[in-house]
Picture 1: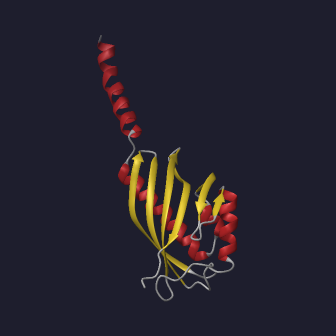
Picture 2: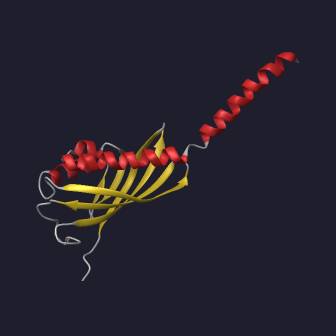
Picture 3: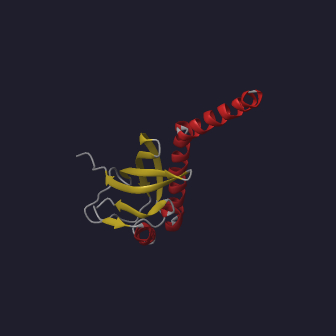
Length: 163
């Protein structure tokens, strides 16, 4: 009986620790998601398509501001390499996280506002929201696997100019 009593505190600690880990840490998850978005903005500002797309899963989907769908990490990276060398070459983006929702502890929906300046042009049908400023709303669906957040899907919608 003495042996069981001395093991009980260790077993209790292990149970509590594993339970705490299973429920995640929402505050840390929010910090990690903010960091992922900040790193992606830095990559945009450097024109680095590899770094910009690195957190997309291999089977991710991305809908751009004109409604084109890119399927898979490679296609997302290739398309961003193309825009970083043409219309958005030298552009700068400021990204604000508007809201993060966790429908499950390992799933996050991240709603952001992107403000792009310094672009050399815009795709057909897209207009600056204000002179020299393209504002878009980007919504990401992310999943945490093995302690790392990755992007499953993204959709970017341009904010129309006020008439």
